[in-house]
Image (cartoon, rainbow, N blue to C red; front, top):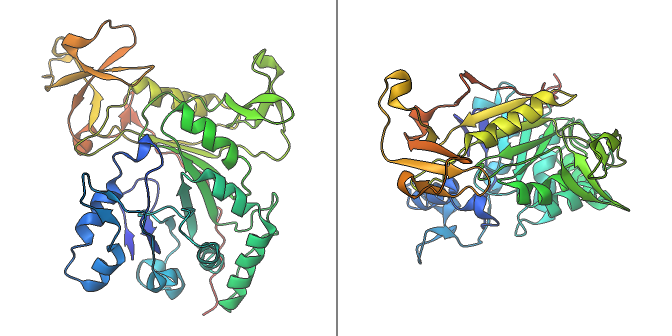
Length: 370
């Protein structure tokens, strides 16, 4: 199924794969798990079958690890009908992970072949499986498989040389999800090695501070990489950073946001501000998109502007992310008060304005041959 979406950074979701497994604490509040459980009981047997076996009711609702490959959805972008009539940004596999270990390489190659044959669309792939992403996208055998599948579709396509620094697909944007510094340190170095038209970070849910300008990277020497500017160097002095680390390319876009849902964890505003400032202060002026506060936003005090302060009030620690009631906060130095208002009312204003910057499109005007 391909549907219009309210996600701020894309236009359409396309899910030829359904089903996943949790890999880090950023998955704890995954909206797709609840969505899969509800849709598995859909009265339409086709929809119910697509989501069948993807969730378990033993203990907590969760993925079972089963992944459904949906052949009937695979060729939808080639139809040129409905939402596919006009060029759009397409979030690929919002109900799964393209690089999940249960997805065969051949099926991934077929998905990329469809992208190659629809160069008018921009495809956005987001993953937490950074290792498999890096391995496949830099594999000559995998690139050859994508070419074979593209030719099998018997359509005009736009393909780069791959797998080095000319992207295989000029309309494919690759991204990794990070929720804190630990996951950023794991996943960002892999993304910097991907030959993609655009590389992006989704820091949502943001559960801790993230510094993209100081990512550890081990080569012949232990380096730190400024992932936004493409600079590298030793930890100190910072002035030793220089441009042009071989085989690395910088991040082109940063998305950040808080968590929503009944068990959402609050986000400290300093984490979002830090990512925004890193993007603004980078030499490349990397676009920054603040998607949402989530369930919680920083609270105001009635004495400052007369507005009531909703209850209950929590305080979030800037370093640990721990959230405590006001009467349990040991000090106020690194704690920020937040209140639960709900995703819609909390909105997405950061310091009095919205931040909805996006990179320039990389699609072409070429239409697929029908």
